[in-house]
Image: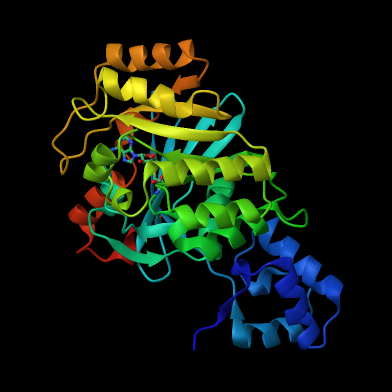
Length: 355
Ligand code: SAH
């Protein structure tokens, strides 16, 4: 059996691990701080532990790491896209975006995705595997180390469906929030889902006040089903009910993402139905002009239509923004970078590519 990754376990678990091997509790606190504050990637680097204890730990435990293969810097807006190599040679991507309120990191939760949304590049080869909490944390720490700064917000909008990797994602958020680690407020975390309804209820019951973001993309089940297979399993009204429960439980405003696809979900009837569906709710709408991918033969709605959606929604008191396209010069929608990179260079010796 492989070694257990100390980066993937909570402080509570680390404490019981230390207790079981006859070590003092404060040693677990120190170790946790070394991994999650100092961001160290080797048991050897935990200088507060004796050499004897480090040798003992190394027999059964490890600290996982990921390596930057390549960083793409946008010349337009300072966005940076990272390609990371995992220990099993899988590749994922993360995107660091600079906003007024600090650095936001778009984190991947799975290698690939099995949700099959027609317009999304991340799902084209299905799900390869779930990421561990350590691998999600490593994306944050690798970027912090690379840019020598703190990540202030994380959004789970990279590849993968976070609620399809539920336990690992919750653990990741919990570790990131721990005051003995990175100590990031739950308010600075956003989880985006295509709408796995039972898991929305579970998330509400976790009592962690993160922002929930729902990829709605149509107010009509028939249209939604045609672009998002998950729409066949869970209907829009089920999602809305789950969102109401989430708002009641957490008092947090929900975001609905709406990718505008020309001729598919951008007609006047869709706008009217969207207003009917969401008017009066504690929510915000994020309109996203479609980022075209080669496997999906549709265009983004015209900007004038995107604007008129915004105006129409605002007129009915529904807070709406248009998502600014970030890093448009360094390869578009999430998942595209990884795919084009794999297509071009997977046959080469991947280890020689690590920066
Ligand atoms: N699995 C999660 C995270 C996906 S990525 C989810 O479904 O929410 C974050 C957002 O980008 C989602 O709303 C997703 O539907 C959207 N998206 C994916 N590909 C896109 C594309 N090519 N153009 C515009 N939006 C896209």
